[in-house]
Length: 273
Length: 311
Image 1 (cartoon, chains in turn orange, purple):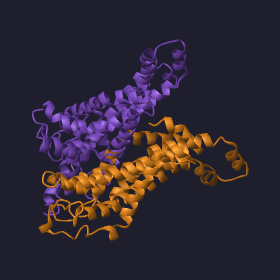
Image 2 (image 1 turned 45 degrees about the horizontal axis):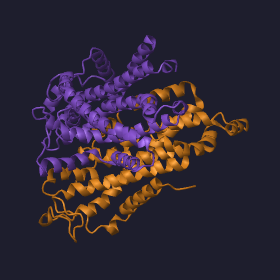
Image 3 (image 1 turned 90 degrees about the vertical axis):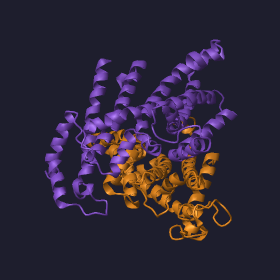
Image 4 (image 1 turned 60 degrees about the horizontal axis):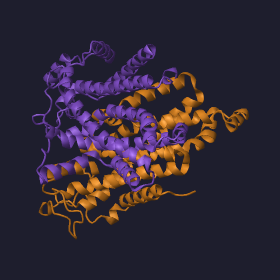
């Protein structure tokens, strides 16, 4: 197995973001919420405040580290939910076929027709802002591609000899799906989940930017950019660094996803879509 | 052919119905009534009499199934309801905003096409070259960029520092106001389109008929022009149309950032003011737009490639 450049760079960036989030309490120089001091407001980057300070005098560097926790939580939890829904529906639809397959297919088509950001916006409008609603909104609205991939992979697997052998041995449907099919469709599903984490981080940032996601004073990268919008002329660093953090984290997930795809499925290498 | 088109158009209807049902269900589970949420700014208590009057006026006191039936019958008559806030028909509000959104989406798409298609083409013709590497690195970066951040930086640079362009707003509708939002919105489709173009052209370059064209002695230019470009265009045009379909949805954040008076900022404003009929209506229109474009693409596809309609 050869690790490509994409995979290595993606894994490095992702590891950095994870470490930044996990070690935030030790790496941060200040408290992200409570160390607000108007005497230090809007200071440019220096040796004390590495990325400068915001309008309340809070350290942008420390806030970005804690913001990584939120972005990672959103990315991972929402993708776990998406993957679970997508795989459960896609695998069972392909395996059982019939009316269940038609129903899942119809539902997937409907989900694909609603832009996921718009759908998440609607769900947030109902649930109200906050981390929990964000996780639900992004977890429920992005499973359609995973479902399609799980379905098509299962369709091609279920006619294979070893699955039929398991049926002959009298394994139950659910047991076959979990022990025979699931391990063999995990590759593409994992690629989708990794790429999905990138888009979840972007969606979280966008929703927080619109004021519907994480609420102040908690440091989400998106809500930091909302504040920065008012400050951009006086304190451009409040916009530059959180945005850069989002960019690098999403780039990491995207490259990791592409890299995984190259490793798991060499045929896809020339057919990037 | 006509049967295919009719079937494809008819397929939209059940999808729209399910989407409408879904939207209705989502907004029916809101705890509390819409009327009380109209006043829930957290500071002043709602006047119970006023709440009761509004609840009655908008028919919110009726049971869910009654409301659903009237929602559906209104939809069938293309009546999207009345805004809670402005008391104006939702369709009228959307109609006012739709065209500025379309203008923005079209401009963004033109920006993306003009750069992405030639770039993807050249990259595919010279795989592994510096241009190819730069294009691919640029594409994956473009897909990872938070668009509104790019918008902020462009606003800072071109509007605040260099003073070349207006920083936000629709102004008098002049081209100058369009540039920054369109470029910002166009970056993601640009990246996707460059990738697809490259992949599509590479696929065609490996096809048997291209080898045949070479072996019958056509020059490189002739092969590219008559065989590669024509076949790759099908995929490129499809991608462009699909991107255009999803662009209105993506524009939500950009419209809000640049205070662009489109359907996206209407949606966001209505969400934060809990103006549910407008939220329902705008989402429905955005989904319709996406479905109509998808159908048009399928029909064009079938016209270009007769094999499709048998599927």
